[in-house]
Amino acid sequence: MPRIADGDKRARLDRVYILLKRHEDGLTTQEIAGHLNLERRTVDNYLIELETEGRVYKEGKYWLPLPYDSIALRRLEPSPEEAVALYLAVRLLVKQSDKRNEVAETMLYKLAQILGDDLRLGEDVIHAAKFLADRPVEADYQDIFKAIVRGYIYRRLVQITYAPYQGSVFETTIAPYLLEPSGIGYSTYIIGHSSIVNSLRTYKLERIQRAQLLRDSFEVPEDFPGIDILRNAWAIYHGETVVRVVLRFNPQVARRVRETTWHPSQQIVRDPEQDGFIQLHVDVANTTDLKPWIRGWGAACEVLEPVSLRQELAGEARQLARAYGWQGDNDDTTAILNDIFRS
Image 1 (cartoon, rainbow, N blue to C red):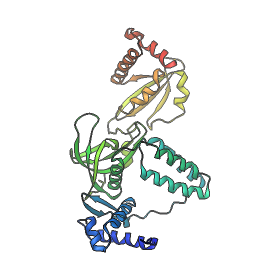
Image 2 (image 1 turned 180 degrees about the horizontal axis):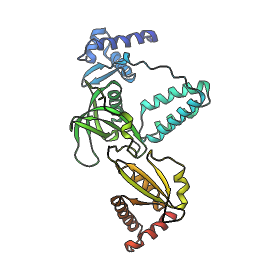
Image 3 (image 1 turned 180 degrees about the vertical axis):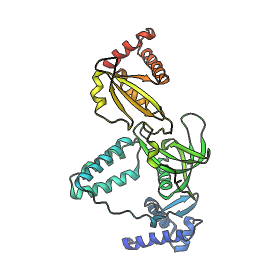
Image 4 (image 1 turned 90 degrees about the vertical axis):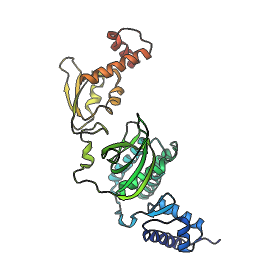
């Protein structure tokens, strides 16, 4: 069979898309082939290509159009310094991802082509894409990612099957108002309205077992604050009320603590009781995603407030001491933990 010219192929792709736009209820592959007098296998290939371009999606056996024509991305012409900033953002993307994401890979290759023409950054971005390609492939993750992202871009509802960390698997329909990556647990979160509770909820993308883009659209409420909803979060757990957390750091890490802005609310002061020690004060809505950060400092960080958090981590410290074979009483736990973290 002779090869179809690129111009002819693009024209056929456009005809498939236009046909679907004229049939709001969707068409099957066979129906599309009949309308356009094309072989079904050819139409299958065209639909896969259009889906990759973000122009169509499949719901059951029906193919439907996405409002591709309404999305017009302006040309990006970064300065050399801006291009380096973009490269650093790409590196963070790769580090944050623990699963293969072919959409991100394609973006990286396109970015490499842009940066490679004018700067010597193309190969570095290609290496980043290769690192991402080496991530383990998780069944259905690509399809779930696409469905959620398309719901976010086109303001379409998404029906999901969700497996919470604790509790039973459930189904809900979510309007994705905001997507937010988190370095904690290499995760991406969706914040939006959930039908099962008729309220705002946050769902972890990696816990979604199935996602289906729906035809129903939604509008983001005018009072939704956008990214500002996370102003009181340490990472992702947000809320209006806050709790004051006071942490004491020993002199060995004091400089490291001082050189970084960990949270917008932070205050760093000298510890009034121990020479060379400092205190970090932060106001957060929830300490769930703060605790892993505290644990990461080991014995160099001590929780002073709130008392409940101090007691919780003290209990973990005793369990850790026992895990390392320490059988002493509670008063000796700090000493043995200092030895453990110095070794």
